[in-house]
Image (cartoon, rainbow over all chains, first blue to last red; front, side, top):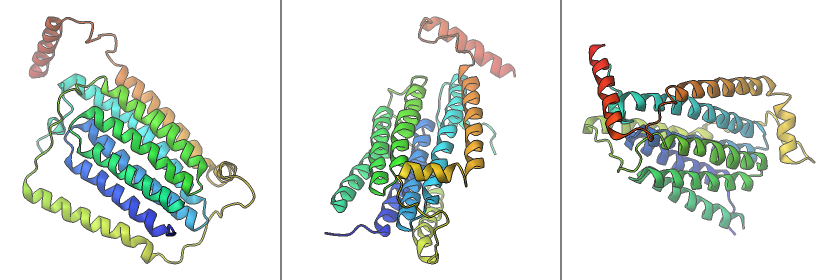
Length: 102
Length: 191
């Protein structure tokens, strides 16, 4: 039987992070862009938990715990702002945010 | 046994997140992301992080994806999502930047070989208990700060989303919505 090592988990975390990154670069809809960032946060959580497990350390799990807490508050504030923006402009496209013409 | 579970769940997770990123339908993307979050909790159970696995299901799938589902009610999600088309040089630059970043991510464990356990796993007790011991001794202040941050985020979310909540778009007739929209547009032009 093949043994699953730390490298397997880190490779998986990298693949998931890349998928999230593709989503962030690709998405125009702000709601789906937020979801892609959630995928990236999740992949990092896997990496934290895997390193913590293979080095016998609990810090990795603690960091993943705080990442989840930050993700929850990010979603609450981000979706609130998104709803306000949608009520103002009627769209949540990323291009409609470029009102500063920088 | 562990290998079978690992490969099965990694395939499922990658497939789900790929659908979530590539789908043109917002509802498919939401469902696929929620499924992927549940499959990710399997990795936490495989790694012996039982508490984190339960937290992943409860908080990520139960709370965060539910907030997304509620948020979707405010937006027009039935139409096909249009994708971005950037100028090619920008795509090139961003891709090179991402590639360099990913090389750093992959090579980071090779550079740091001398890792020592800061808070070693406590022998003889379950994972949730060990988490509790570390969380309420070494990480007490970050834990309380996270609690305050969640409270602030909750109040901010209520205030941001709850504004003008008394005017329901679904109960208004189409003409009323148009009149309100025109009023808003003229107000914005004058400002």
